[in-house]
Image (tube, rainbow over the protein chains, first blue to last red):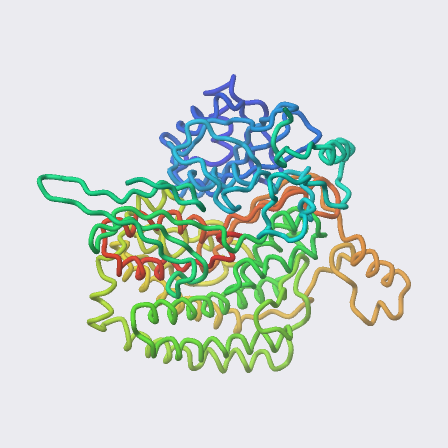
Length: 205
Length: 412
């Protein structure tokens, strides 16, 4: 029997009943939501036994109000079977600044850069990643721009703008832009109360 | 001696060591970001032993513009123009990928008429030829063949003239939009495309004459920058890079979108996965694209150029001036935009550089909650160290040219 996305979903449900949170079919796209601790096991199984050898992308979505806060999204592709599948894990408890997920770069070497990108823009760390550095933003950047509590206009920078970098000993403040949710507004306010010596985006002492 | 690169935190090692009784001197040098042959602002940190590249570490992000973040603050039709600016050598292919994703999210794929689909295919293939022409010109220029560059840009100009004819803009057209096309084709469109298709096969032969059997070209490209099929898949390389490594994979064939299943074309693949194979794959792809353009031109159906749903596409101008309801629709569309249902889609398309994926998450509002772009150049660039490590420094230039990166898309 040919492997299709639907058959894979059924197979994963059967093989790893304790790992699957739920499965979703929206617009004929199959999604399996997994528990983070079972992610590597399921991925390895799909890559080795079900010919999902091609990892298209790894990305994240920040649901600021929800708990767990982040969705990590993996798009898999099976070239021999022409089948596509989406895996998801939910991570990030309230107050957890850097949620951690096991890396899949041991299974698909290409995941290395995708995971660096997610780390760079969302601040999610990948346990066991061989080279977890920032990739798109400058290396001395302290915050994570794609998070929903990061204002679109960035933090107010004191003049002169030193190449977009926030000098460490200044109050970062927050741009005047209104954020989407009450939670983030509260966060906004507390951010502007950050002490003089504190680096933006770091945990309060 | 060990020191750390300030920008990348990458440990630089200049060392002298003995291996098998021979003294090895390695040196770390910097290539880019201001280097003509890196096609933009790519920086490579190369550890070299004499002329041999021992280790290559790409450093990207110099063109990071935060397009994914910006898109979250725009309505769906405003975010369209951002996609042009990512991969600025093939904006129409990006428009197509984005439009397909939004249409899938809205659930209006069935309403897209044959006319719209054919025009989209035609333009996407013209764009593929234009993109490959820029690649061919710059790639040949990197390796010392200057003439080809001038010829390629001459032909590309004809394609840009076609885009200007239909949209008024040469490059950032945003002509393909969710719900159809921005405007109808003009009467002069057909003639301009035919003027191009009638000469292009001969011109393609000219490029073949200049390069394909050229001894110097073959010396510079054959057996250089080899990427095995297994590595190409493992690293997520796609498009001509994957096909050059002898993997028959084309999204247009595997998941036909926008009526590609109605067109007759072949998928060229290479055998060795070296620079020469990737060169040949792209050259043959241009021929296939021309074939598709001709078929689309011959079989062009008549019909509306955008969907009739006034919630997605604006009503025609004559209705706006005469009907109150149409005016309200027009106003609501451009002030509020449309609201797709809650959900998420990931749409793959075959862009000139490879697999272009748009992942759009909707929370039911008029703005995308999250837009992620699976950029082909990003993944292809990740496989670059595999191609150049162990080869000559001069061959690194050939390999960079052969993967055809656009940094606007890598960094987004």
